[in-house]
Image 1 (cartoon, rainbow, N blue to C red):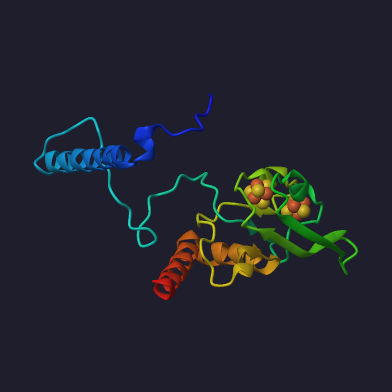
Image 2 (tube, rainbow, N blue to C red):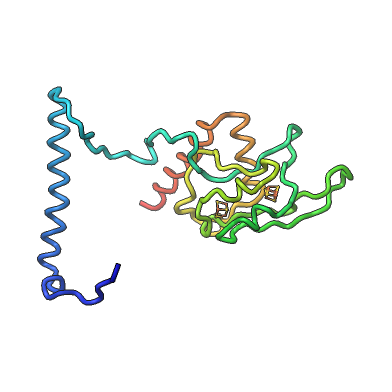
Length: 194
Ligand code: SF4
Ligand code: SF4
């Protein structure tokens, strides 16, 4: 499609464009209001009325395959499952996984990650890392959203402990607990910011 670089005279004076925007917004508002009124008096329509979800206090149920924030899975003894093979980092199109491999004291374990970090500011939540992992050591089944506005930008980088801790909470207390913790944090941040 050819992009039009120049604005027309009517676009440059803005008034017409503002009127068009208002028409669209109020058209949607009134249409939605009308649908709600019809539904309230028991009239069925083929079109669903739009509703505002008061996130983070409320949220839509997510599909089971929703790609949430990452976690590093654990062995039965609580150790990290990751073998530092670097396949996830190689598959990552955003180049946002940093791994520092280390030899394990146990000779039966070849390597483990001394450092494992994901820069979530660069991450595009594509899930390639999960697909690439041969030992199911990384998952995105937490059901929680990416960090939106942490007080310290360094928190956008999620380290090994953070990623492992999510697995512990998920296994010990279930996904709702993980989401509750996430929501509490979001609400605290909102209180600080607003
Ligand atoms: S979800 Fe995609 S972008 Fe994010 S760490 Fe995994 S592979 Fe990289
Ligand atoms: S998470 Fe999986 S793919 Fe990535 S380094 Fe560890 S074992 Fe390899």
